[in-house]
Length: 485
Ligand code: PFF
Image (cartoon, rainbow, N blue to C red; front, side):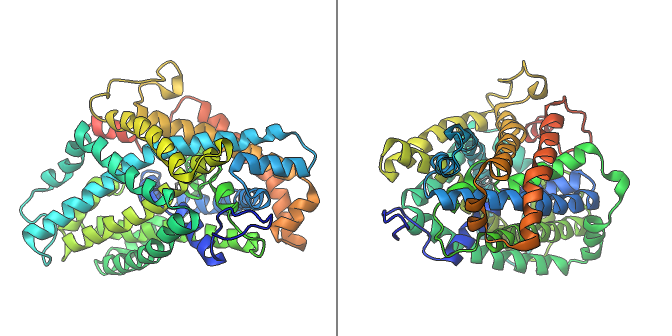
């Protein structure tokens, strides 16, 4: 535990590199490995990918810097940090709504994120058992047909016991590390798991590249066909950029609040978003060659990782070992993100009710378990429950998809618009100048992006997100995918 500049014993990252690893750990997760390739595959490849990169640079990065700046100045949980910046700027304390909504959103995302984390645990187990039964040298599932392999996923998520049990297990692991604190738990996870993650990612990508479909992948991911760039695809790319960089849910405000004064936030934010984008692209370069070489389709949406890939591993030499390594890698990335999601409401509760960390983690974890169980059950016993049927854009959606849609279409864009307005127009200029670590032309560019580009572009996602969906090109919802089986 380090002393903060105010002399309190608030826990801090032990070094700049610890913060960078933890923030990259928060950003790199299922969003990069599961959602990005699925979205790119379902949305036609190159046009989506290039627009996504534009969104990261012009919108994601300025908001990331704004969020870490608020946290670092505030040195408290997200809503309290906003109030401190507001107070130093003689602005209304009610701007804290942007962070309070974020705390709620992080809690909602955590609930369904751990359900998917549980699916990853399932596949770690499946490949482990496969190696145990058939040895390491062959492809995966030697004695099974393609249909049998692809039916593993619907069978698992069709079972209430499996989905809820695995959700609870993944949430329990997350809770354990968050309960141990910032430097002792969250930082520990990031320091060990992120380097291991990078090694596995590179190894699997290089191995997959020898399968022969690398050029096809490069062409698929980077050929820019402007006519494919439709409104829904642009919005899907913008939403994906936000989810991937962990923005709009107070996550980076919270992580920023454990950063010391000696850290340059601008260069650190650039590093975090660069690493996150690189991982998303490498994930594409890792997954698509494996799928292409097996002659399978990349446009399976959410089923890409959990159905198409396990099938593709059958075609690879040492496929079961590669499969196990792949899902362990995904599990590491998911855990460093879920600890970030849990930390946001836990830090808020510690500040607000002056409770100890372990107690706060248990209470929030229990709430997330209840919501997560409802989300998990929406794939099986509660599949006919459509809680927001009366709102057109949520019509016919199960609880899992409702949580996903509510956070991605409402909470994240609204939280980010308010952040941009607050930092761009309301916060004291001197405070912002001192905190952001930018000078000259870069500073002016950043300010212009935060003041004008971010709020306008984000308001567009919000408006289009509210319109009833007519997006045939978009990835189907996970629940729909399974119902179609
Ligand atoms: N960025 C994470 C991912 O790509 O999986 C998800 C996430 C983590 C969102 C933490 C928000 C957050 F605060």
